[in-house]
Structures are given as C-alpha cells and as structure tokens.
Image (cartoon, rainbow, N blue to C red; front, side, top):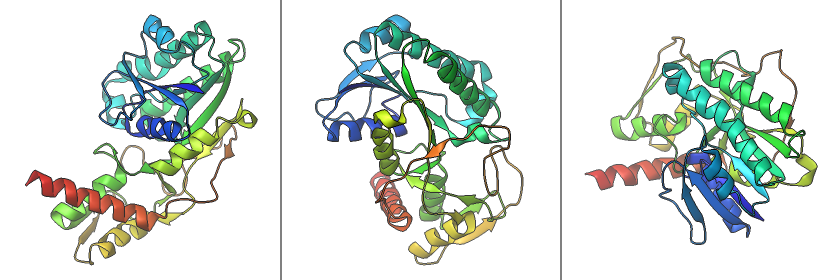
Length: 292
C-alpha cells in the first residue's frame, strides 16, 4: 500500500514510517520539518497539516493516512492553547477533508489514553475533540477510520520530556533521579518499535471503525522503574521522590468513568522493559560521550 504519515518526522510517526517501509509499503512522510531519520525509498514532503491544498497533493494515490502530527507536549498545549487547538483539532479536520478530496479510503488517527483522563488539560481536550470529529464525520466522508490510543511510549528518538528518557538521562549524567510523585504511580510502558508494529497491524480491515488501545504488557510502579534504572547503573544513584501534584499525574489509571470503551491490541512478542531501559541507558551514554 501507499501510506501518508503526518508528523512522520517525529518520535511516533518516524517509527511507524520505518515499520511500514520494512513491511513493503510505499511511505510518504508529511511534516513541517524534514525527517533526520528518512529511510531509503521514503518520500519527504514538508508542509503544515492545516494546508489543505498541499495535503491533497501529498495524498495522491495513497490507500491510507496515519495522522500523527500534533502538539503533544502538555505544557506547550496549556501555555499556547490556540496553537494546540489549531493543530490538533482543526489540523485533524483538514486531514480528513483532504483524505476525502484525494479519495483515500482509510484513516488511522493517533490519539492518546489521556482522552480518558481528568488530567492532561488542553492536550486532553484537543485529543477528545479530534476523536469526536473522526467518529462523527468519517462515515459521511466515505472514510474507514481507526483510532489508536497510545499509552506511555519510550525508546529511540524520544523527545527530551519523555519520562523514561528524562529519568535515564538524569541517572547517567548526575547519578541522581528526582521524581515528582510518591513512586506508587502505575504505568504500562511500551517500546516505540512495539507500538509502531501494532499500529501497522491495526491497518487490518477487522479494526476499521474501532478504537484500539496500544499500551505495554508490563505493569510496574514508578518506584520499581526508577529502582530498575538505578540497579542497571550499578545502584549508585541517589533517588528523590517529591510528592507534589503536577499536570498529567494519575496514580493507577488515566481512565475516567464518562468515556466509551475501546479494544486493546497486543502482540505475541514484545521488547522486554529491562532490555529497553538498557538500550536507552546505552544511548544516553553514547550521546553524552560524543558531546564531550
């Protein structure tokens, strides 16, 4: 298939692009900045998700669109809500209208488990609104849509504010980890390559019209995560828990009672969290070593 991936230069989008290429699909990356990870055979188009005309041209001949472009940082969304609404909500509508005009039959919308949360502020609100647009309009537009709700992602190419990257970087560089919470928070971390694989699996016709949860299979507390990082580094890491509230914090689950259900999609094999953390630590060591 020929696939367009909006936000294909970013953390999630670039890994979906790579997995799609590995599976033999023709990949077009659409992003406001060039991808530093462009694979051989992938096409790069630089453009804004609010540029309808450019999107229609980029989608020519595509059978599916993965819409990953978004203002995804919670702090940035709260500080600049207009930009978050324009990109996350109006951008999604523009992508849908472009897909209709280009006669693209399939839309894969990258959402978040934060749509279920009472936390998440403006980011949560924009993702909920965008999901509503996908649900309300896709059928009338002749588009088969699947909503992909991603959980706690980690791995190569993560942004500096990514939780595991931040914790491992501080542990490696400062031999200290500061965490704003009491350590009892439970998460289901999923490696980005596993998430990308499941996103491609979701392209199957059986998942058209559904909402799928893509989260990890290993549940652990933040304290267990931090102690695992410290132990991997030999145990000589100072750990400080600051039990203060922060935006986006939840202890056991992001889900709140007012939202609808979705299905969880899992793989028979996955990257073990311990090995994933080791990969992350080695990557930080390599990067910081090159900076010296």
